[in-house]
Length: 348
Image 1 (spheres, rainbow, N blue to C red):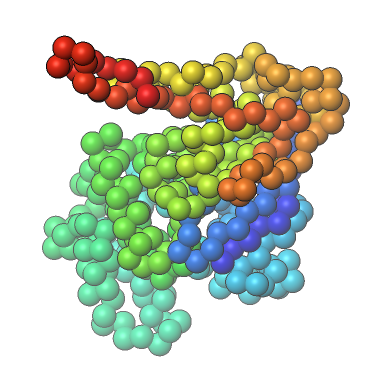
Image 2: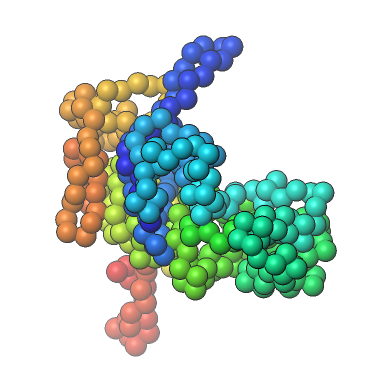
């Protein structure tokens, strides 16, 4: 199990035109990912989602807080020994086109980590090719056709499957999917999402999903938690369906209001919200980070920062002084019998 306790990450930058600047990428993020469970992080670009993923895989340090893996606090583990913990957590990168070395075949891409793994465990190196073929079958690729090919000879969906197979070479317990389907053709996305869902159910792998897309978060996060992150702070979290169907934080409501509605099948939720202004990260506020854009902000919101507090008895939490559940996602239009024996569409 992975547990994050108040993880913070701050960058200090200096530009020729902007001068010195402090960027708070993460502001005390907490979450728990149980074995075989799922946690999704959703938010707009620049909110800190990818930074969190890099911290969990050891690619980025964190400034404050604590990262706990199977009860072990990593801050108390010497740096040289942390690799063994981070190896159990593998990332599926957003861009399958740049994630693979174009000068190496699929057999070489999978063979290198498999050989390293075999040497560590004392396994027979002669079984490397067979294991590579087994992993390709697991992700839905035919080994005979895929192993000798270079990345440029594969489609985007096939490349992403190879990326997933490579992540599985070290027998991870956690997969972090960072916008794993955002750069793949729409026709290929469902297959990759189905594969990730299958890996979680068949192998018991925990999944942390980073995305902009509410629909994919709902599909992969089935039975798990959804965390809504804004400017590095989790402002709402809870069971995935609860947060989507009855969000209580105005930012979550604005975010879900932007989800397209399928014409003829749905109509916009009755309580849809729009932010008062575009995001400007240069605007400083001592209070709620969303206050400059919130249609319900009060003087207290502008001067005091709210903390996550529970709402209801379903495990949902929010960081808002004026929480109110609203229905903003699309409302399905149901067909019911009309008086004349036909049918007419009515909104449920």
